[in-house]
Length: 412
Image (cartoon, rainbow, N blue to C red):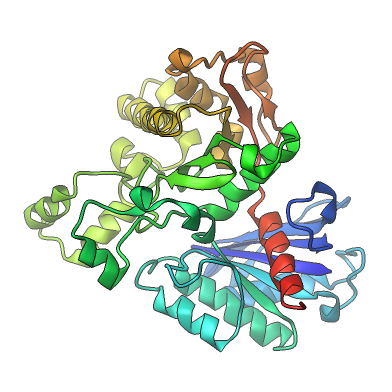
């Protein structure tokens, strides 16, 4: 089965074509045929596509919306120039899997998309107003371009975290607010954290219930997850993806009283305050320079005090969550760094791990320095009590696996 895995984000579409037999978690059950990304949808978009074994196809062209972007992807996938093995036309795309950020409590499992599922995703828009509308655009565009005969599956970020115990997901608010409005910690980056847990289990040759690790997805958005017995036990993002770690432009955890205080002082409406917390805070807000960790590390090296402060705050917040989760789990076997920062910044990993020697982390400087550009492996010494790994994530592969599993389950 050839599955198109689509990950629609803010002005971006990431995709992969995955050939799979539908066996969840099996390393030899999937094969990546092609993939790529479109950035800056709505203007002059940067398009970068690559079929396995061929040179990357890069261009810049106007793409007005997500439908135009997905149309461009489908045209390339079926073109002679791409020459993707086993795909000669749209009929060779057997299913589409979509990342959907928020499923609320309604979706505790991934689901084949039908009118009722679409309605459910729409009902969750108020929980993820920046994300679910974009995910819906991708779903509707794919349906219009491929037709109703091609099955589509919603793979929810929140599903992996549905295993959290009540004590982990509830807030210290009146319980009735949870019962009436579903106000609770949902957690996000579930496809990434699940993929990392499965990858660690395969790497160590252990059953899912033996996986006790802390996963760190560090990129533009950042989250930590304590995975106990192979299941999400607690995670840093909350009711929305704003909570937890310091991020590129998101504040992460703050004193909730600050929201009303800042709004009153600055004369901000609720929507303006939401924008400040999501788009003007984090690394960008602290540094006043950039939300890109690469820019900040370069500036800090050149003596920029606020860039250095932003990097320091970022690393401290990650370290604090690691310490809290190690206490919550009564220890763990390993830490896994992933995401754009986690996979590619030896300096950030070094700064985070420097404060973890009491927990038994002994970083190997040479191993750490070598882990960039998609490389994965251990970065601690052979005698480190708590092992640390760099583990490139692959959310699209996980989306494809779960899509195949949903469709396979529907046959029985």
